[in-house]
Length: 545
Image (cartoon, rainbow, N blue to C red; front, top):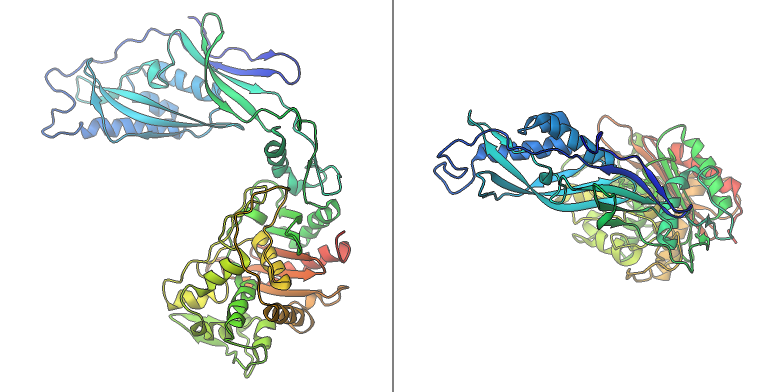
């Protein structure tokens, strides 16, 4: 049988930067129509205008099994199970296809050979390259016993797959450009583990050094390419291919950030440090260091660190002054019972005391001072939250929905409800609060800036800086009080669910740097995120160069 065992051996063409043929897919088989057609009963002869529901169900089931990798099950729904399983396995494995997504159309059409054709869309993610999308069609034939089966033929896998042509995956061998910090120090995943998942992306986006490849249709007999079905990646620019990709990161800060996360005691955690004056990211670290980038793409309730934004909204409209009395009871009911951490209370407290001790009930009692959606408007207008950021790496840029009811409005005052952020956002919020001006964060230079913000009034900035400084000297961020320099901070505790401990947050600023840390299930911000921030700021200069 030609082409057995259906995969050609890998081929290498050209020198180091040439193209390597990874695998070939092909089966040369005589395709015979399986099963007989029930005479006199067409696929639409069911008393209505639509196709037989049993046929459509079989088509969707075949595609679902194929998508889920249940290839024996999918093949069993065809007229030639053995052949079908072999071809499907060869096609998906030979082209490095992972978790295909196959979606049947709602319509179907009867063909001249008596089969029912069900169109479908195939989205084939090819490992490390991208998704190959194409359209094909499943032919279904009714058997003598009335059961519908997929009438097996090569062309249903892809319209161009045949006994004379097959597909081959070509991967280009590329050497990505070196990635450096702001001073030209080389960054690598071994020394800076949190950067390992990002370095390939940074190199590829900046220099065209990322993965490249193509799916080619080739002649079975000669092995020559007939056409290119799909291409992935961009060709490197000769002018920049060998030029290092310089980031805004600082090797000293990045190393300190990686080491500081050891203070999270093995819990999932993330840290971002950035410059206040321009938003340039100095360090970005995650624990664990592999996989998901919690620091920039995570979606967390920011808890009481969000009170920086809430305070800004209240101070902007003169709804409260730092030394106004805003009582802090243990409990406050707004649709549900809200309380403070460890059910603390501060009778007769000033707003300053409410901020430094992170009093939830006091902040919630001021909800009537803000209009519906006003908190989100302030977050967007002054802090850029919810606008589209172009940082140089994938990010989640925050969300502050309009509250659906009074209970959700109460929760939003303390960074709960549906408010979502991450350490990158909260480091930026901190930088904006203490400088008065939002700067879109960046990891690489030259990113598009589509954000539109307004500066905070100088009076509000002065008030926020004072509140954050008092939180370090007399409040919940006293863990940072022994650090050199004028440090300001805000702690946060964010509820997750009834069966999980709270997430711990802490944001801080010193000199020209703002920092944000989240520790999942850290219980309290001062107790879990506090030691991480303390470790970082103890290991780096008071101000970056």
